[in-house]
Length: 202
Image (cartoon, rainbow, N blue to C red; front, side, top):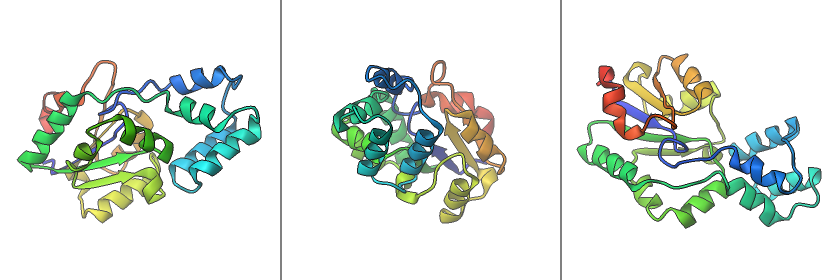
């Protein structure tokens, strides 16, 4: 029996256009991410470096980029947060049948944008019993340590947990620990259909 539902944020609640960041950077003659830049992004998502250090690291590779160029490009992937998804979550929260947890790989630049552009972000946050952003807990998916942290912190049994994420690497890592998963496809599926898609678990 499922007692806890862990949700990702991007492409589960907020719509994303993930290729948009690279498309925007290409306008500034940034053609791809070096291995080092990928590492820097992961460090940033873990909160191991500040936004200023993250931007400076980019400028070490691409000195012509302004701070605003990087920030705007980084946020280009963020789209809208349909209110009907918030309504779905609010009903879940009010019914109080399941413990609700958010677990998101993100960063301060993205969250600052969300706070400024998504009017109901605080209402969204308040629907959860626990709210984990990677840069605040210094852990990121798909590392096993982040799932171990959430299970221990909330005294959860893996077989009583459902984890919903659009990235297969993340759901594979959770499944390896005995957690039920829904690797949601944002092009064809919607989180509000949870109890239809995963009815066998409830």
